[in-house]
Length: 56
Image (cartoon, rainbow, N blue to C red; front, side, top):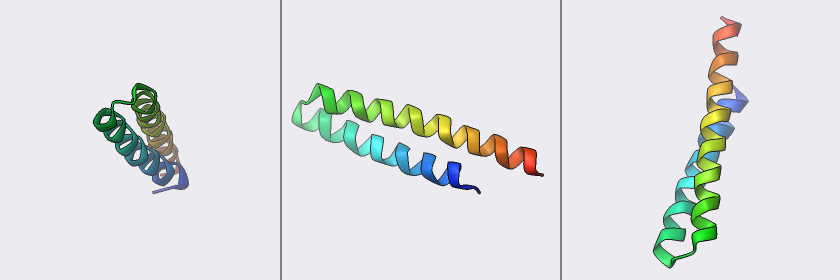
């Protein structure tokens, strides 16, 4: 597991929290930021997975 995968997972978790809080308090901007963070995290995690595969 490399740095990209760890950071990607952390960004996904942060995005989930932001999205949930945004929905609870009715803040559409925070909800959108959370969704964006989740997508960025998924992409970064996927890049890390590719790097891991190439190292083998």
